[in-house]
Length: 408
Image (tube, rainbow, N blue to C red; front, top):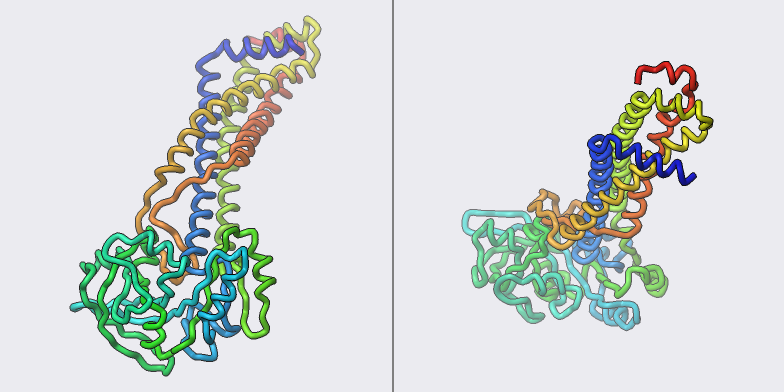
């Protein structure tokens, strides 16, 4: 078998340009697949984290009839005494933080502009508000007893030229089916780097939100964050209640999970397309080698080399070509993926609504894994070897007498 390896290396070196171009094709395909796999994984991972941290939490406690999309303010659809329930939930070891939230729809009026927005009443000191507190870019964060202040998103601030200290008017739906209009002062401007969410979401202290919507001592839900996502099922079981519904992030984010599965399916077809192009290049390279070395195959057959050995010779060439291409591809692709995992791809506002059920930030950060590197490398190598099977079979079928009469 050693002589087959030596002959394969010699044959690949006989036409170095063609060998190099074939190896580069494999390398580029491998590097591209690495980058695409990491990017898709990073996009889905980032979107899931945004959904959990901004919209759904790991778990939610709410009434059976409450739905985020209609933001019902009927007391029958809301949770009574939410602060007491939150305090009890926070006593569970796996729970990082729990806090009530009150969701209401309204209209922001400023000068001659009116914009439909979502108003969220929050408990300002709660750790659940870390994304907004850490994302503060101007002004100050809300205080629990603030009766006139609101927090607005950076895109909204830029669109309306609003700054901390400016006064805006909010027209808010109430539990009685009418609206209430009040003036508020912009206390601070935040960003979560999620334009679709930031430009349509305003925060105010829970007590003030309850007052303006006339839902005193009620909230839409209790929003729960855990230290470890893997503890979701255990905490959900511990919170089972006959009075309220306990939903985990998978149940709340059904649409997102469907989109994630579709993205994985699209990635599979994209991989097949790239590998298909690579396979075509390899097959063409080895077929050309067969036609160029027809007379040589005849000589080897006349000297006693069997058909299976000739086939092994070409398959070994394909394997060596694949190994070289994959290694070059890893050398190119891994540094690129690691670089963009740090700096990301900036896309800006993708036009995704805050109520769409899918949160997308303004940047995508690829998320590389060893598993992806291994699977992409193996796939590229296997496709290369399989691509060499047909040329190898053609070479093995050559009869020595016919091959010796060939023109090559």
